[in-house]
Length: 128
Image (tube, rainbow, N blue to C red; front, top):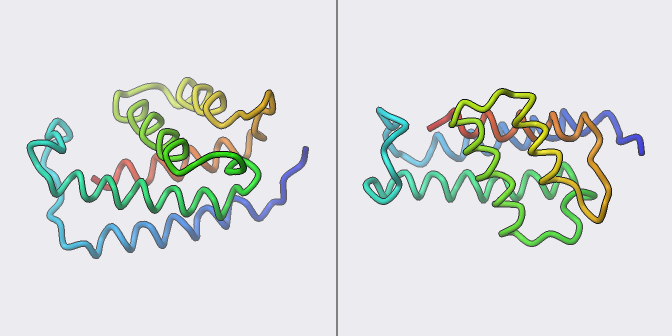
């Protein structure tokens, strides 16, 4: 099934809004990626803001992929893909895993959809 070419620009607009929201929260940037959200509650807040922003953006940009998924399922897509990225997983392996996460009822997402979602997650993960 061919998806409209407007998906990537829509995803980028959502990402820009999420970025602005994350930057205006007043939290100081983390000095190391190893700091846990338990040790630094500010990081947990930022992660929740990012996850919430991702859920909103995902639902808006990919209504077909969001159909039948609750917020927790969409948040899991974000957190699991972010964990893959932060662990140094190669992009092709991370996008392959993401394709499986995005698939529903035996239907795989279009490669452009997977790539757009991957770019959203990668940009949001890198902001910490």
